[in-house]
Length: 300
Figure 1: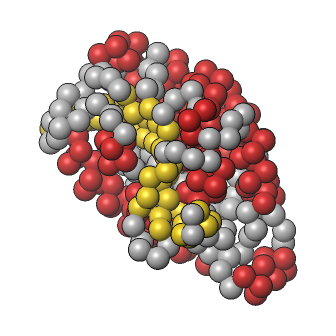
Figure 2: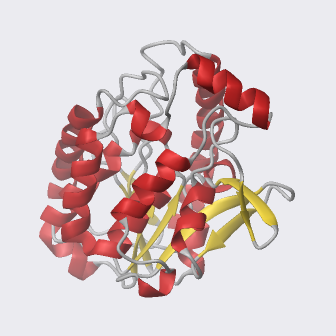
């Protein structure tokens, strides 16, 4: 049934990438499953790490984008994103009073993975969501230069510095739209496929650092917001909500399990898509992840 979804879904089909810090490998696995099922995006919207993943797919296309993201997430190390030790982090915080890490390593990763400079040069329409630091409103970037928009969308407060664009400072888009469904509608989506990495399962490990504790609490609130917003959108727009695997909640700065997580996510999404019916307005296929998830059709 999965191979018919791409034809049956109303176009334009939007792939919506959630935020999720170091869990971006889940989206690489989901993308592999979507590619194998023959489901192609017409446009892409992402928030936080989802903006990074989505931007690379918009740049390279689904086939090459999957290969690139798998390579990145299988090989990424902590120091590739969060450089230094506890002393350098403390020094960075003392100097900046705002963040623990410089964003130069993240900028290097973005620049080395992109082959274009602007949104207009992308293969697919793409939007990156960030948060205006002053107004605390979500902002959709879909024109201009890519690198600052991606850095803004991934600027986790306390970890990375805010990004200034046209005189305004921006932080991580996940704080206002962790699953940016409304942004997809603004860009013209007629149906939506959600790649949400966040599990609603209770953590199997307790947070071990202040950063972990803060981000875990924030993510919990964002998940509850998504649980409210998604059915509202699905009432008038077909939505496929891909399931995420059960996660061993490690530290936010830990990438050691990314490769295994990618493969697990691909398997879970493939099994889901193999029996996935075609959604229609008022009928959402899938749901936010819980331990008891099976194929779920939700009337909204």
